[in-house]
Image (cartoon, rainbow, N blue to C red; front, side, top):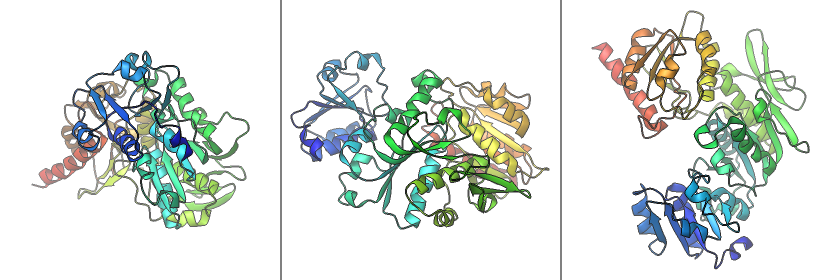
Length: 457
């Protein structure tokens, strides 16, 4: 870790006292560095832990301390913090090295990496990659925007024994990441998200595209123009919903069955896979492309797919005794994710059954109009809630707006019959009504249980 020796006697400031900020502080303290922590919140949720774990660190809260920032040689920025915030942008000195925790990790660790970003599906893809790797006997770990903070891994004794690290990377993390050299990187897709921070879809896409500069192989989605790799010298493996050329992954439909395919070779009927929907078929293909980049056997990966149970709050089937297919997709916090869920689940319905949608929340400035045609084509009725739910309700004549998720679930329960799908796919963040998407998903599950009980009385 020769880079660490260069940090001695540097003025190091950690911006943000959340989970990532604390992991940075633990790493710095472990190596004996003097550092300061700055958080703009009056009472950060983890402030007590900061005081207990880092008693010698200067901790300034309640404002961005511009003098402290201006004097920093190294500024380690948590991903939730916007560097364009005037109080920060105006204070950063030209000599300051502005990095994130993943960038610091990339400068220090030699572990082989598979790195994934995208507006939707990245948690499913990296979790499936992790599961496949474990099943194949690879000593593999998850990090980045999911799992254990990457700097905490450098404090673990077995870090150097890892065969592979799978990184889920948000656009926020990519803003401060420059030094990663991954085996393969992928932008799964790009759709309206975080435009309250990134301002335009073009800027957001450009930030996502930066991941391709930091990997040897680019895994690209043929279906998504904004996710294509524009670097001509990169080796590319692609996946998509169409038939693939030799050496690439796609879908083949024959006799009413759709198969994952490698070139012209049929691999497995998607109906046999645990995760339903065409959008999940694409997730499987992305994993095959990324795993192949790492030298994993396609045949063994297909076997490993069969034991993957999926993620909570991501197109998760919720058990009930009413015969309705309840789907918790609370993690669909943007329009693209909801669109993928609708278009992915609709083909799984039999002709006599219907799809009902529950959506709404804080849209973060997104344009909901891309949902209009999908709702008209596939959705029988829309039940909305939250700050921007009425905007979604306005997309369909068959819609109702409610004050609570429980009320929306009750209305969906009254409308749906056995075999119908009721999909919670909000297309919005949850922060207007819930702590996070997890709390929203759990409220959905509770409402299903309570509504079922009430209906049986």
